[in-house]
Structures are given as structure tokens and as C-alpha cells.
Image (cartoon, rainbow, N blue to C red):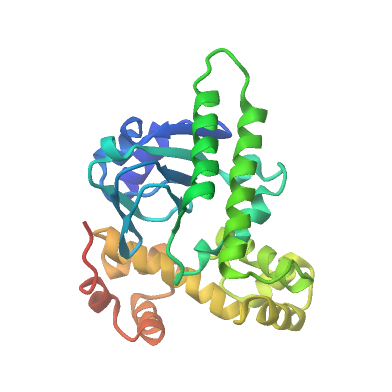
Length: 286
């Protein structure tokens, strides 16, 4: 997607704090098969099946599936979306960060792990809960002439808390310890600043802690070093740009704030075992 395409997507959608829509009403989804948004999405597949392409993988999702699409994440829905009926809740963290535990819950969901599929499929009682919640929030959003912001936020918070409950049971995530809290804060800062700040010391300064404390605590909370987390996030954006834009390697290197294309190429090969051009040739998108 070009910068112009991405800007047009942003301009087509004027976001309230929370909005609820269907696939047919998302003009950018229909007109741009492979695309990304500047907001988060929770997508409920109520019945039938669909193909869901997210970043570099394609999935076949069944009825009663809740998919999670992070801001900036490349995605695409394929199939009979009219028959499948996709209900989409969109929101941005900066607008709702003050409300409840939404930011914390988002950070704790397992979808940020590249090895976890970006969705859950539910059965029986759980499916009934989420189907009812998505129907209720959509009905409430469609009421005209009523100030719905607080109610929509409450529904969103409830959906996310229910999702957290299911994901915790599914993954047996660790308790909310101090290392987990600090790691969550660090990940959120990386998500916001990874293009500008690539040194661990920068994040330690922002958090008001020592470099050693950040390194040791994140190692406990995430099972990897802060440097690895920064590098992984930068690599993710590099892969997205390589696969989903026509930009040259030199242009991508500049967008990611590398000193030279040669340095970017060496960094990428060291991380992924292949050059940017070789990687671009390995992934097929819809």
C-alpha cells in the first residue's frame, strides 16, 4: 500500500471513540483487498466461513470466530463476506486509554505473539456470549440521536475482558507481576516509538529506570531481552513494507530510519537469514 493509499484510508474513516460497522460499509476494505488501518479492530464472524489473511499468513476461519487486527497490521478478508457477516468494532487506544483496563487487556492478549493465530474460535456457551455482546454493541451504535460513547466503551471493555478471560484460560498466561507490568509498559513504548528510538537506553530513560533494571526485568517478564523486542518490532514493519508495498529496498530503508540501504540489508539478513529482496520473493499475498 502506498502512502497515498494509506492516507486515503485514514481520510475515509472519521473515528469516534468506538465505532461498529460491517464489512460492506468499510469502503476501504472493499476497494483495497490488502490494506491496513490506523485503528484496532475486533471482527466477529457470526456464521459461515471466510479466509483471513493477516500479515504473512492465511487462515480459514469458521463461524463464531473473533479476530483481532492491531493498528497498522496488514490484513484481508476473502470469501462470501455478505453471507459470512463480519461485524467490526474499531477503536484507537489513544482515545480510550483512560477507560477501565482496556489498554492493559490489549497489551496482555496473546495475539502480539507472532506464533499465536490472530483469532479465537468459540463453541457453545462462549460463542453465545460473544455473539450476544457483538449484537448488543452494534444495536446500540445504530441508535440515532443518543449519546452512546460511555455505553459503547462499556461494551468494548466487557468484550475485551471476556476475551482476556478466555485467552488466559487458553494460554495459562502468567500472573500480573511487577515484571509483567513493566514489560507491558515497555512493549507499549516500543510500539509507539520504535521508528525513532532503537536503543534500549532510550526506553530506560523514558521509563525513569536504569538500563540494567529494564534488561533484567523484561528478560523475566517476556523471556527475551528488550533489544530483541525492539528488533522484532522493527523487523515486522520491514516485512510488512517489503511484502505489501512496491517501495524499493532503499525507500524502505529510509522509512525505517536506517543510515544506508546497505546497512539495512545486512541487518535484515542477519535477523532473517535472507536479504530483503529474497524475503520479498518468498511470500505470496492474495
